[in-house]
Image 1 (spheres, rainbow, N blue to C red):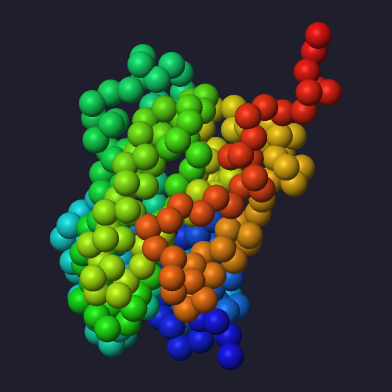
Image 2: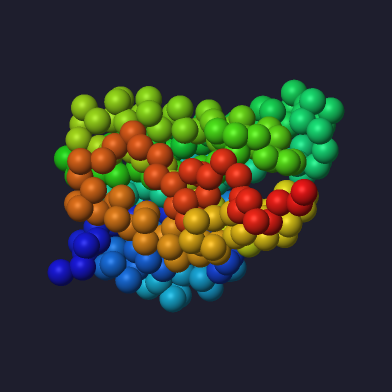
Length: 265
């Protein structure tokens, strides 16, 4: 029996085939899950539907996570398709591009701060609240994606670092709040992956190269590796894990500096 067989999974945030969310969908599909996908608006619907073909997806739901009305409508629609939900995957993050280029103190604005936190952090709480009725008695799993910029400063990551720190705090509070009903809440802090979303960060290619050179495993990780970790955390094999941040970054987060041999002087 596959580890996610008979489990229903809603994935929020699949944008293209190179996204981390796509890696998660692929892994969960291979593990036997039945998957539903959301799309932000009609313009993006056909692209998401094309991706879903490979994962046997039959349920597509419109949902703009910045709108409480949209979230409510999305779960009403999902409730007409499914009787229950086992796993919610939150793979959503956004900040205005101009906030991700330059000195933090110079480029951060009140509006950009609000947008980054609303879309990247609060949306997880809003989705968890909306999903709760469908997860009743399912011992469900809620999962989100973070990044090392929540814990340490990274060039140009700026306000997204603050939003991800907020998201990680949300994981802990949600784990306590939903744990009373048997649900688990976790986050994966993935290493940098060449995705469309990451391309918005200035000098991202250089970040990839640096990360690979400093990683204990000597390379960058793949979306499939993040997907496999997500599959594990959503399975009954991880039934005792909640409120955790799992690093899937090849060990980059444990290193204080790169190879001494590479240093000049």
